[in-house]
Image (cartoon, one colour):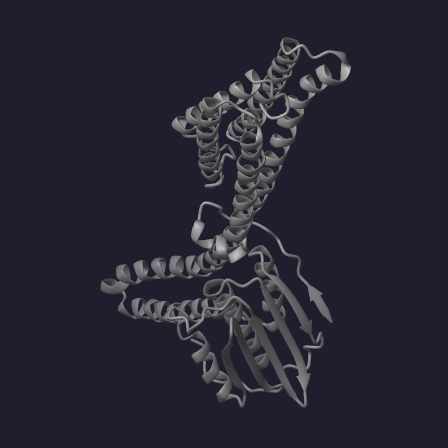
Length: 415
């Protein structure tokens, strides 16, 4: 039986060091190169070629080249600043004012010179680019107001320039009016579309990490509740009987000794129940741990596939308990000591032996110093009942494999 677990995206985007775990860093680089590459291509290659091939006066050519260089550098710097991250409230940080002024001034100079010289087709490229870049830093309402106002102004300037140059007929005048706002619309749609994809991915990553943190917090609360229920009752009774024994110590030593004997028995019971909670919430079982691993791995954004022999009734209580502990330890290692995206869990019964194998990718290249001795202790427990537990690195994959008899008898007490 194959049980797929869907991949849930959730997380905290502000933690840059973890971007590599989910591919967010690669997506960031892709978005940056696409945005800056497209902007540089339009400004430097297309518009620069137009300036160099046009019959411009010397002063105009020099001014246009300088203005183009300033506009290009300012646009690339502003786009890089825009991609530094998405704050929790979803609103981008304001742009560097100096670069906005420099880029806007360069675009205005470049567009103004080309417009004065009658270049109806290229004058609006640089201003449209700067308006679109600045719009990416604004909230949606202000963004659309800026784009609408800029498109209307571009259409008016294009129409005035067409009339001033003596354009006649519907084609030339209409093109001069429609081309500038069309260029602005295409440029803004390209930049905002790419940034929208980046912001969606960033917020999904933020949600993925938050869900994983909530899953861990929920598990801690559940453990705390179990421990409180057990310890609270025992300690309250122990406190009352100890107080009674203290009062009886002078007047009735026999009854005081009896009360202290009861305190001792209660202490032993409290210690036993506490160990049971710590070791496995009263009793760990393979079925419960597989179900819990399915939920926790999904909440952590890890795609888990379960290949399970559904018949676990043939397992003895000890075998079911030990395999549950191994499943829990393997799941903990996946969450704490790897950057896993995929985990495969395989459980089957062969030739009187129960076999459990957990394999995940994203493992560290070397042994984890923080792994602790959990697997070592479990290996000793399985060896005591005739089973085996092994683990190994295979490239970026970490594999835990366990096998033990179906009818394993009780071994040493789990720590």
